Amino acid sequence: MKIKDITQIAIGAALLASIGSVAIPIGPVPITLQMLGIMTVASILGAKKGSLAVIVYLLLGMIGLPVLSGSGGLAPFVGPTVGYLLSFPIAAYLIGYFSEQHRSFPALVTYNLVFGLGLVYLLGSLGLQVMLGLSFSDALTVNIPFIIGDTLKALLAAFLAVKVTANKQVQRSLAS
Image (cartoon, rainbow, N blue to C red; front, side, top):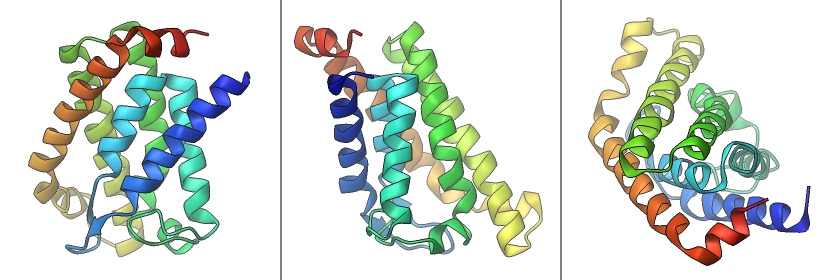
């Protein structure tokens, strides 16, 4: 891995840490900008660097920095949000992988909706089911208040990724 790659991963993790710390608590799962950051970073950096940026971000939270919805340490990883947190690097990898194939706005929106929302909601709901003892259908309903906002985040992330990667300097920088 080149210095350029490490720098891009660090910048992606820093972006996630800066916006991931903002949270509006509304029950067991807060409203955050984490998914906007994850979808954007993965769509721009691709599978390997995007998922590594998310892993670095999660590790920063795990060691105690308040970047996970305003909290840090191990508590978020043993609480109701564990399924969401563990799904983030998987979603980033899949969004990044497919964005490397097609980086058009409609394609990125599709990847963001399927992996950024669908997969994250699925694994997040499994975490809620296990940690809170909910039925799976009850755990899925916890996601309902987030659908409209997260869909808007998916659209914005796709728009940002298309605009950023259209820049010639960014294209040269991302080229391996």
